[in-house]
Length: 234
Image 1: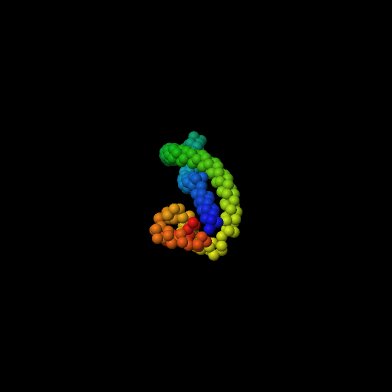
Image 2: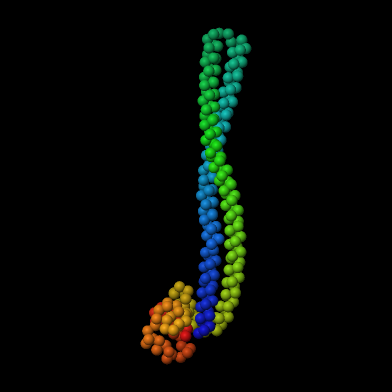
């Protein structure tokens, strides 16, 4: 029965180690960091799409501006070349030149608006990329910390498994089977010591009559707590 209590101690220790492995502070920190990276990636994708659209618009405007300026140069050269002498034709060309200059002004204003819109977007992208580098570096540190902790815990689990195997060899198979069923049903604790008049598993006090009954049983008799059902080790 003492070996059964040792088996329970090793199982409890293993459960605690597995819980610790599953809830490493560094892993929780990594989860939060990865969530931030996800949000940052979404924001960067949106900003980059906006930047690309503004850049496309800027390219279109600059292309139209170049064409407008070229057409003005051509008109101005023709008007000064003397090849066009009719007043009506010259006036039409002058009106067209004025229209092109107004269009140039409108295009320059639109181009300036795009440039002004691009500035904060590019600033957000630069900040986001810098933050992503920081988060990636922090994630690397946390992953290394997690890996190191897992190696240590796995080594402890291996040692506990060896100790459990030694304890298991001293317990009758039918008692082990009953213990495993109780452990599965009762939150990992299938056997507990009888501490004075109390069960070491549920910590409830046994009645005087139950204690008297237990005291009359053979030393190797399997006794269970009448409150929680766990195997009591006397």
